[in-house]
Each structure stands twice: as structure tokens, then as C-alpha cells.
Image 1 (tube, rainbow, N blue to C red):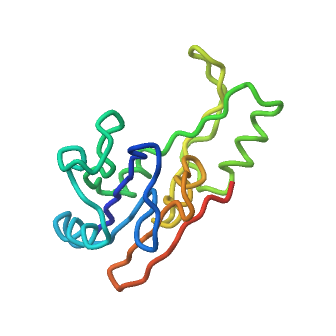
Image 2: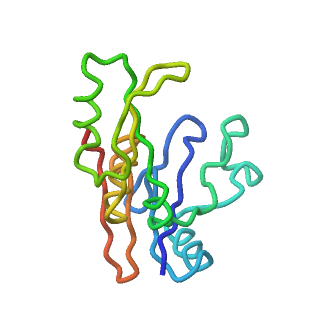
Length: 159
């Protein structure tokens, strides 16, 4: 069993939000085909431009699923960065990411910009979804997790 993530594009300048869909959906299933069936039952559709449902300049509203492999993410670590523009980047990094399990301690690096970066890990699909909501949240709720047992958890941006 695995989780599959369906990420919504704001085609036409808005996100579709109702009692079933929001910016991101995470569906627990035995296969992508099973997850796709559940997603379609919730209102996810494919080829929205081709069907005349989505804005041709913005792109299709729904993207095909990506399998969420927390083991692979945690092995590599998820890089998080604070740029040197805030008054205390180290404090800002700790405030934003200090509650996550640490993969690689943050340090200062300079490429084009000076930045304070390190890598974090995730203990659960809910923690991963919360991170994505806090970093990239656009809707309320920002994510819904559909567990195989029928439980649905809503994730709202907190930061």
C-alpha cells in the first residue's frame, strides 16, 4: 500500500475547492490505478484542456498522480532554505523547520545568494502534507488525506 498525491493547478486563475477536492489530495491505495479510480470518484479529471474544461494558457487542472515515497524522501532529505534577507536567518530556519526531524544540519552556503540551508525528514504522510500546506498552501483546506480505511484528514496551512 502507498500514498498517491494529486496536485491541482489553478487553471483559469482559481483552485477547485469543495467537500471532496482541494489543492492537494493524498490517496492511500494498493496501486496507482486504484488511486486514480478513487480520485475520479472525488471529481478529479484528466485532459481538461482537451475536453474544454480548463484554460489552455494555464494548463490542465489536475496532474497525474505521483507516488509519495517517504522512505526515499527521508533517505535523501528534503532541503529547506532561508535566505539572508531576514534579520535572523538561523532563528527563522529554526522557527519554520526546527520541529521536523533533522536529516542534515543547516549551514551557510553562497551560490548566487547567501542562504542558510539544511535537510529535514518526515515521520508520516500527515507531517509531509502539513509541510507542503505551510510552504505552498493556497486553499482551505490545502490538503486532504484519504486513508484506505475510509478516514479523511484535512490539512490546513498553519504558518
